[in-house]
Figure 1 (tube, helix red, strand yellow):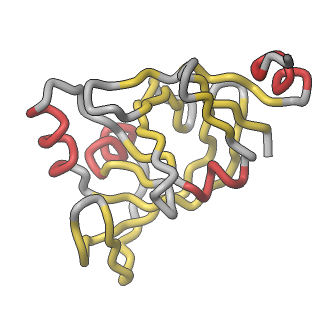
Figure 2 (cartoon, helix red, strand yellow; figure 1 turned 90 degrees about the vertical axis):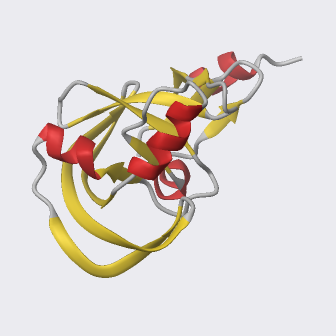
Length: 148
């Protein structure tokens, strides 16, 4: 029987240790523009990745208000901004010059804090998961991605 981790590492994947939260979400550390570590929920049900507005402001990212509205995360017609990320670092994989949606995730973080989970800085969605050929080993809580 082939060991999944060994096989994927031999095929140019990098392994990122995830953590399973009390709400049964997997979270991973991510660095944005060489800033301090941010925490993102892995959400393969999310069509796009997004960054919390408060986290974007803390990092000092320039925001452009979008006329488009966002839906999901328990809300519809959510106001959306956009920003350009110079670099997004997940493990040892780097994504450069990504256009990223910025949403107010305060309601998500309030719900997480009610159940004793720390706040998140964003959501890692299908746009990046598909681009990086992501594989999540649920049993070992390891996210495997390839450098795009």
